[in-house]
Length: 450
Image (cartoon, rainbow, N blue to C red):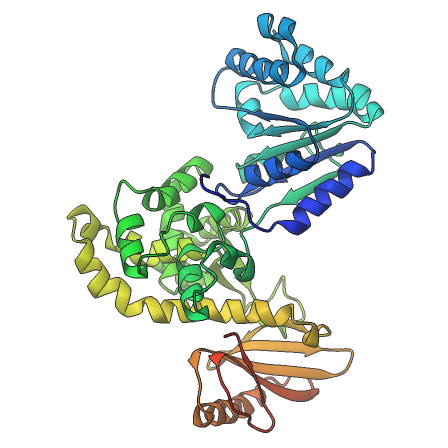
């Protein structure tokens, strides 16, 4: 990332600092998707707690050792190590184990493992016999979610040695807004968030002095641009059979959210679709949702699958299915015919998730567990259940400013729907979340995110 890219991540920084200050041995696994801000987080941590930052690269074992020898020699001012780099990983770990306790960060650790398959076993040996006894503090970081999760598995030599693990996820709406101009309206913020999501690297690509249309034209729907290429790059780096995964992601982006619908749309066998979806869930690209009222959520037949990342939603809906426009350099036509007419509706669906997230962390509703609810005919944007106090909160989300008549109509609609949610015999309350509303209507609470 360029520019001033570090924003927020307060909880993660505090957690790492607390772990370090305890003085006990720590082997921390930090992982997450590319562009999510792992490296920036680690660099920010090392500004406060001076330590060694080592970046592995996709190169041979010999070149890795030379590069890391140089980095360590520079940190310690070791001229001998500069002239005589480590010849093997045993020498590397022995050297670090003999030094006083400081944070040791190895970024892109999977690249080390690619070059030297025995690295996890060597690290296990030195952790058991040296690092853990000297209260060392080591962070292993990686972007390959599959490989990093394999390191956490029972078959890995490191299994049982890690003391903490952190899956760094994309920023929530409020934190993503830190990348946007302070004077920007809530509506514009939602529009940008619906396109770029919570990936810091993506949020840094747009020029917010320009319009949304200009930004999409200049930064997404041109083949040589980072935002056009990154979805392809990310999937091809993680997956062995990207073509089938692309088909599944595209099917979900088109609105095929049930397993049977995805099978029919892709033409793939159900067993393959189930396996591929499981992988996509592990990669934080797809999520499974069930109605909040379901008792056995894992086995519920009402589960649906949705794309988890906003930018992937945008890319598969507007870019992937319209590549002929881009191939023939008809970007303006693509914008005018396909993207801009639908962008408001697209953002409206993202706003439902934003509203649900905002209400979930509102202290006023701290006793509620929130989610969605649907059956074959109806869908409710927000349902909160307070089992302790026997209350149920039914809400609807509107990506616009409302007038009194519209609020009354929504209230009537919610009263009709609540009769169908008969799982609970709780006291009923009604809620609307919208961009703005100035009046009051009895029996319903209107929350404006303006």
